Structure formats: C-alpha cells, structure tokens
Image: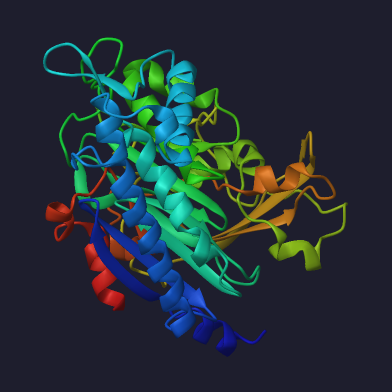
Length: 258
Length: 161
C-alpha cells in the first residue's frame, strides 16, 4: 500500500448525536467513512441506543426498569435484555465485594433499582455492532467518553484515545493506542461525586478517575466504576483483574498506568 | 531523555506483556535472533515503573509541538511470555512516542486475540494538550450534553466535521 493510499484512507468522518443525556460521537475511517452504508450503520446504532434508553432509563417512569423498580411488573415480564443487564449488575456486585450495586440506597434508605452503571457501556457495545460489521472500515464509537474501537486494516494505525486529566479537563494524562478494544473512564470530574461505595453510601475520594482498557466496553465500564467506588482499594483491585490495562489518577494528582 | 521515555523504558517488560498491536507485523516477522538493543540511556531507579507522577518534568525544554526535535528508535529485549516471545520497538521524537511496533508477538494459539485486544496506556507530559497529543477521541468522566461544548471531544469533532 502506498503512502498516498494510506493518507486518503485515513480521512476521519465524524458524527455526533445527543441522546440519553450525553453525546454519542462516532469516528469512521476507511471504506464506509462518509458513505450511505456508513450512515445507515450509524442510524442503526442510534436505534439500538434509543431502544436501550426506552427499556432501561430511570428518568422515564414508563420504562421497563422503572416499572420493575416500582414492582408493577416482574422480571419475567420484561424483555430478555433486562435480565441480562441485571445479571451483569449482580456479577459486578459480587466481584467488587459489594462496592458496586445496581440497587442503590434511596433518600429513605430503601434500595432503588438503578442499573445505569451497567447500561451505558453495555448499550454502547451493542450499538457498535452494525458499525463493526462495516467492511474495511475503522470505528471509534464514544458514548459520553467511553468508547468501542476497531481497526479493520492492519496497515492502518491504532485509534489514539486521550485520557482526560480529571484535574484539568482541557488536558490529557495519557494516550492509549487502541486497535480493537474498549476504553472507559469513571471519575468525579464532571458530575461531582456521583459514584458511591454501595457498602457505605459515601463517595470515595481517593481516586479522581479510573480508565480501563479491555476487550469489551461492557466490562471496561463496569470495572472503571467498581474501582472508583472502591476508593483507595480500587487500584489494587483493578490490578488483579486480568486482561485489562488502566490509567488511575489519584486525588493528589499522581498517575499510575499499566 | 524525557520522563515519558524513561517511564516507557523502565516499564518495557510490562509494555511487552500488555501491548495492543497485533497482526500488522505478521508479514514481516523478524528473525528469532533479533538482537536486543536499548540504545537510550536509562538513568535513575528503574524499579517497577508501575506508577509515575503526572506532574513534574525532566529538564528538557520545548513543547511537544517542536517536531524537529531529535528522533530515536528504541528496541526492547525479547520478553518470554506464557504465550510466546514478545518484542517491541518505539520510535520517539523529542520525547513523544510516534510509533510502537511489535517486532515479535506470540501467534498460533487462541489466547492471541485476548492479549492483543487491549493496549497499554502511554503517559504523556504534563504540558500535553489535546492538539499536541494528536488524539482521535477523549475518554473522560461521563460528559453530559450540557458540559459537552466545553469538552475536548467537541473540539475534536468540530475540527473534523
């Protein structure tokens, strides 16, 4: 392949759509970047995301999860994906020793079903499927800062994913070159301390952000959230997870990467 | 030598175990007898290198935008892993990683996909902003739509639309 061919292939086509209260950003390179086929796959990805939102949103009182949480329907009544997501949540709870829990404590102390900590990564990984099917096309699909990456042609470079500095949001602390895999970051930077340790109900502050790089976004996202919720123990916990690399920014500004 | 190079060299063993560059080099596998060369001087305590301060920098001056800075190539030793030998080569310009090539990687078993499916993060200097880091996407704490316009990602999107 000549250099000129590589250059023309590497034009990045981008799309942005806002849904589920966050931006969904797409970058495509290669054969279907900017083509009608590429646009159709993007439309299919958006349909997947909207369907996931309709089923799982805790902001929509009519969603299956909201109705399940209120006890109006049984799990068996719900679409099969609800059980799939709740099972992931149970697994994450076990593996994090209870720090991650999709049944969060409500204001009155009662547990409220809120699987959103699992849904975003899971939904984005699913939504990426029609894009990943595009022939000879590289994909980077980001759901609010968590992304699925794929490079179809071994002669093309990896996607370069910047890891935001939680203490200076216009800067990056690391770059991850990703060919096929996922990158997810959980941190307190943008929404305040929204991740809590379910064991205590408190937001741990030892870590400012946790970025996990792994084979799929579902677990990269879960692991990043678990590690953040575990606070000071989170870094150790994450190092023991195999098949991942990570960037951890501690509250004091020091950075660990492996 | 800048901090990032130092960090990478000191963690080369980790790097070769956690690389994310796969099949691209299958067509040009080196000979098994590739000479391990580390051409750059690594000073100080290499230790585990598993963590590094995000702040502070070495004495080198100049921004990473000065692409005319010195280039160098560093080849790591061959690391034996349970999946087979791994060897990487880094190309650096003025302390910035330009490219990482995997000269040798394990092949021939089903674990390849697993170990090749993720990549090692490369720490950057404290002065690195999105532009000089030359990145495609930004991973950060969940960006709400309202905060989006201030985010790095929006800058990237706009530059390419």
